[in-house]
Length: 346
Image 1: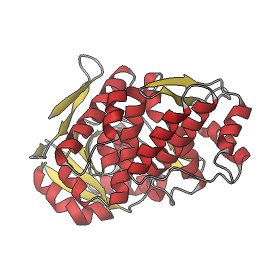
Image 2: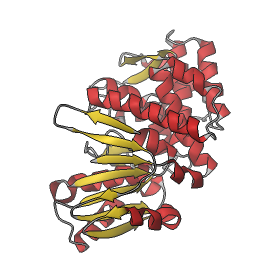
Image 3: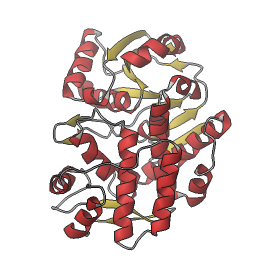
Image 4: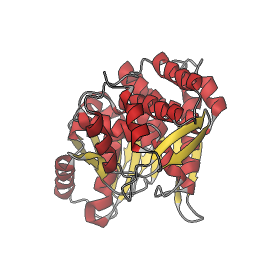
């Protein structure tokens, strides 16, 4: 299956959802992956990449290594391999690997091509598509980065068979996010679906890629509707920063964030309380955590201002109006936000 992403008549790329047969590249290439994926799948993907020269860069596994120090290590390895401007990087891993590979590609010799080969559910349904790249800092999530679109994306379900259940479920949080924001019928299907069925899983991945492809094609640089894909993320990024990117997987933080965003939406009269509970039960169906304890409401609130969507001292919230519909609000009073946060403070 091939899904096209088009920005205009000249620019775009394809997302392939099927077994990877061969990736042919004219120049040099380097596969960027982490220690875990290297042990499981590196030899498999190397056999399917045809390039003038093929190198590999193996980094440490985990969100806590998504930083400028790792980027410097990747770049230094690329210099050692003497990659040039016609070379290609291959991001082979989850969202962390994809974001860092894309960022390295965007700044190496002022920008070279890269290809996404996502190996996690979260990366296949969301992170690998759209060209967001970057790393974290002590001040927040993904605050350093660029927009740099991949040349192609290859999603293969076979890689998901070795994915730990916790990692798989973390990816489901992003699927639920898209359904709640954009497609109520898709959401209703998720309430009963068995994602252990390979046909169902492939269909769901394709559905998410189509949703994101449509959104990204309309708003590549996140100046409008693309911000809706951050439903739950404004809260999630604060949680990740507060827990030093080590306690929760990104999708788990997003699950917390979705529940928090829904609480705010209920308090604003946008979302029915029963719908909020319905969404929370769907998250719980996939063993996702839904209750995070906020220790300091004032500190948590202040951290919102480091969010990339916030500007002019206003916090931008992506909220469900109902299942399948959304609003973008930057006029929510501080007291209402803190009241909502209070529901998660003992």
